[in-house]
Image (cartoon, rainbow, N blue to C red; front, side):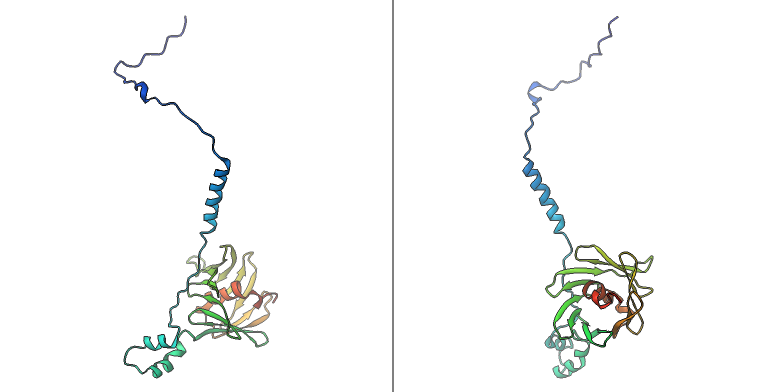
Length: 223
């Protein structure tokens, strides 16, 4: 016998009126428009890299230093007492193996050459910028689990890692780049003497790693 027909819908099931049934339409998509849209989105992602902004924590000019001392204090006395701890105070001075000064880092984060020209900025949070305020990278603080921080460049690529427990800087491949001693002596990959960071303390390791890895890798290169 032939198959039974499907059951009819209940009589109370409403049917949509004919005027509500609209035909489906399609159209061709411009391939160039889609490509341009994708390129635009990709460009936005590439432009979303971090930027560098100064975060000066100290007054930078003599007038600002005197003003911070407070009203009623003689300006000459204030300058005499405060200029040593202001923006010009040196955190550490980089001296090479031959005793020549390569650079020095001031308390406000400005890094200058031996001749006094501005080289870069190293902020207390580990971010690094060029003299033209371009973002060069950063050094993260030690991780809670392993005591290791990471050095990334301006493209957010891993450059090195910092072992805060051993005061050592390792390459992205894991080989030792430099080790720092308590007295500021810097040893290279082969354990040879590279120079010294005068005034260095372990509390400055983040800034020291930023200098070596992102600004002056030649200081320890091949040693």
